[in-house]
Length: 184
Image (cartoon, rainbow, N blue to C red; front, side, top):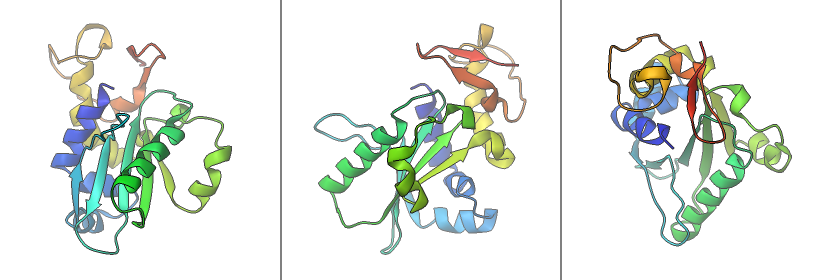
């Protein structure tokens, strides 16, 4: 997915942004980010690639598994859980965890939540929407906008002046074929 490296860079260089997504105030987000080490992991066996995992540096804190989803994908929660449980199986199955899905907009979220609702209600899966978070959207747009500065709004390295509109990431969608279109 083209957005994965972008969000890797965002959370690698500004890990407090992740905790802003979770709703923490800026000072608390910075403090919490200092307590974690961010990595993008790939598992052996069937390749499961995580968009990111925040590994606690101290005991008692949960692991945060991150999935960034900018196009509709019916099995996004099943995929996230497969990655989480594969990680726990290979590492410490007793560790507390939280799975976080960062959607571009609510429209990207699957409608059928039934099998996952109990995990959401219990706080094991949390959903956030970039277009509903202006501060986070502005930070993310610094990384996402250059992907769409090429002719026709197609993803790729920027080849001209940036548009510079904050929150522009929320105005994009990805079709099932993986092609990005700009929605103005």
